Image (tube, rainbow, N blue to C red; front, side, top):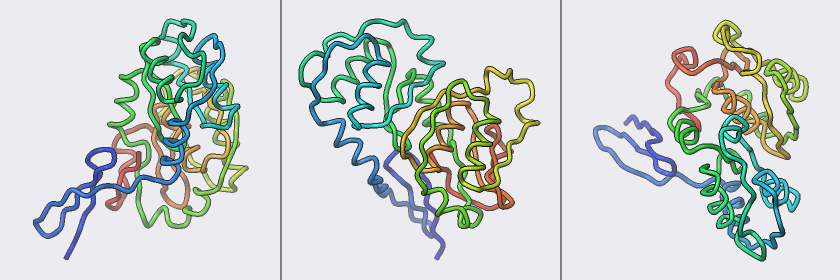
Length: 238
């Protein structure tokens, strides 16, 4: 009997088995449960100037790691953060502030990301990682290792060199697929603490509208499309 599992919605997988179809719940990762619990916890808020101040304050409290999407935030009109004085739940304040800015937030890959609703929806539709079980097997332990870094207008080439040296792993970038994109379109602003190497790769690629997989014994980064399709059937990662 042959079974195939496909992710059809966040938190819901579909099992195809000898002509039968079953919808089964996908297990919530432990890191996501921890972040959800922290976001439900009330925190004492003071006066905050803008959304970046809010994220820096919560990060300093060790509540959660934040990813601010710079291209999206530049499009938003910067306004003072209102109605955050006192003790309130973090998720309630995030909802209120994002509505003020016309932005959206979500929990993805060990962090809370703030971006535009359109960009968030595009990320959810487009897998960032193409998974091939056999190809990934030699990398599983390294992908679980924890990393911290701060990229400030850092070129993709330098980000890749940092990960390559830190993790002692081969990383290949399909430069031909990136031809025509300006250098400013391939620079990264990303600050994370103690996330898995897998999540670091997810955010590095996602923020630059790229994807990654493992191919021929190396981590392979390229644009979305046929170039990232594995040689054998695999499960897309989000």
